[in-house]
Amino acid sequence: MASSIESTPIRSESVPHSATGAEPIKQFDAIVIGAGVAGLYQLYRLRELGLSVLCLEDGGGVGGTWYWNRYPGCRFDSESETYGYSFSKELQQEWDWKEHYSGQPENERYLNFVADKFDLRRNIQFNSHVTAATYDKAANLWEVQLESGQRMRCQFLVAAVGILSARYIPPFEGIDSFRGQSYHTSRWPKEKVDFSGKRVAVIGTGATAVQLIPIIAKEVAHLTVFQRTPNYCAPLRNSEVSEETQRRFKATYDEIHKKCLETPAGFPYDFDRRRAMEVPKEERLKFYEELWALPGFKKWLGNFRDIMTDPVANEDFAEFVRNKIRARVKDPAVAEKLVPKDHPFGAKRIPLETEYYEAYNRDNVLLVDVRETPIERITPKGIKTTDREYEFDIIIYATGFDAITGALTRIDIRGETGQTLKEKWAGGPRTYLGLQTAGFPNFFIATNTAFCNYTVCAEKVVEWITDCIRYVRDHNYSRIAPSPEAEDAWVKHVNEVGSQTLLSGTKSWFVGDNIPGKAHAILLYANTAPAYRAKIAEVAEKGYEGFLLQ
Ligand code: NA7
Image (cartoon, rainbow, N blue to C red; front, side, top):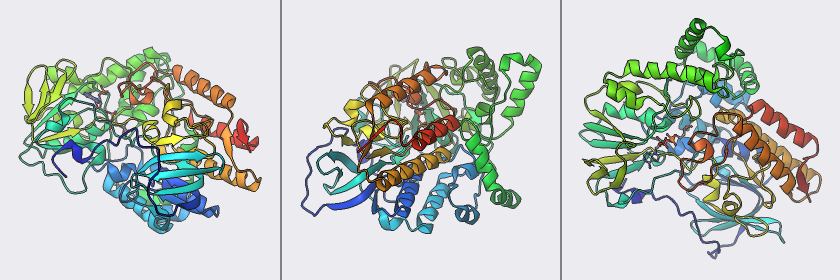
């Protein structure tokens, strides 16, 4: 890893539209962009359908999120047995999850195991960064262009680019002047970063930083954490999977998956049916304590059913969490800085942690509140706030992603009128069912944009797209795209559903507010995942209602 953030540049958002390169242009029935969780499965399904498929992957290996995010402490916050694919019973029986919340190295091994088992690599071209995709109306083909200049064509283009893959680095002044090492957590090097004896900065305290900080705090000479917004972090309570539990997973995968398909957010647990404030205080507190002792997201997604809609219910639990934080941090002034007070519990993604708060009890860890003393610039020696200059050997940017839409709008995708997706989505994403966008025929988005455990819902999205392409071909159609009216109605519906939750009023990546200049819009479909799946299934059953087939 070179010493400057320049070594991992954010790729330009405005790439040249014109194609170059002299090699012959290959043509495929379908091109899948991305070899992560959704892309691998999409490749498998389309190949099964008998299509010629090419999968283009930016990275040097499979895994997407689990290829790029190699930072210390990176792991699932979903239960491992629910995050793995459900489409192959054989695969489920062959793979052993070692931890209940599996770590990045094992997750990457798993996705490599999947790629090998289904012989997917022969259709994947690695180190292939897609810069543009242009629809040629006369030929009814998409032309895809890579950074290398290489071009290829296809009838169906599927973007399986992930929802948290377009990394974000704030445009701090002087960022390139820093003489030490800089890393963004989502472009972590494969080689181990040596923290021993180093003065290290972490900017950001989202789910990523919360996983990273307690691990590196033990390795560094000194760690300074630059926090803008404290989060409601809840204990992960990870543990090893015993042989007995492993056998139980394998014997009950069908039930586990069925349960995940039934619950609102795709996890093997559901909200409590009671309304929080209807339960007497003592009983409520007992319930909170029980939830708190459980692993994973149960404190959030197994809580009272009105936790995300009733501000009073939400505040009741938020205060419980604040007191949990206060109890773990020795210095009351530091504790108060770590206690979130400006947003409801769960309106931002709840980070799950292991010894996160204890890290701040260490003598070698300092918390800087950048609301009190904002970062003015990055200097050759470190970070200058309004208060003072801090000197570092390493700066880690745990500053998140241009979520949901960024990985798509950073590609120069042009539909039938020549309009780019970025232009079309300037005011927020405009799709029909999250799957297609009007004016971009045969272009599909294979990401899970429901508020849902990723793989559980991504599998269903991939299967829907596969069935749709099968339908188009079987009925001798050549193109499919949503009608503008159907799209308008869907966008309106997504906004209505989102505005009924506490998500819309809080600055977060759920609504695009983490990126300066990005339109505030509900980026995830906040209805339940079963309701979403029922809707997309109904549309398909009605002969792809709302879509224009030609
Ligand atoms: P997040 O959750 O977007 O967190 C990014 C963090 O970076 C967050 O604490 C931000 O503060 C902080 N940030 C961003 N810009 C700045 C500036 N300019 N100054 C100071 N601090 C800044 O990204 P993660 O990678 O942690 O997690 C993303 C998802 O990946 C996560 O939800 C999981 O689903 C996996 P802010 O809160 O915006 O004030």
